[in-house]
Length: 166
Image (cartoon, rainbow, N blue to C red; front, side):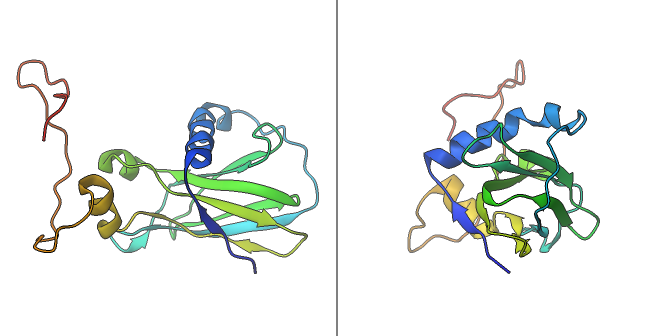
């Protein structure tokens, strides 16, 4: 089996925007031509609860051309997903779940390479508590207790988010 490597930077942001724009299209009939290919599969995990993440919307899109290929599936009760008949190429794999919204984070994206008919395993996860703390709070001082509180500061009068709060 091949492995997927983490993708970051500007390209990751561009792909994520494309993935975010696709959920409405994911509800329509899939008209992508089917070709013999391989299976891209894996497990989506909740790194905070340390258990599989059921009901995650997993999307695989062509990294070289977003219009060339796009498939969506939903992870099962054990967090498993599989996308069949994926042709040779380079893809970006990501997922969405309400848990990500409640944490206020974007999921990491994986770059997936399909080279023939060998199955590709690509696992996904909500970032670990340590990565969430680092992303939200920045570098950790030596005397830091390691705790983080995530939330939104709101104006008491109209409940709108209060800009610039610390």
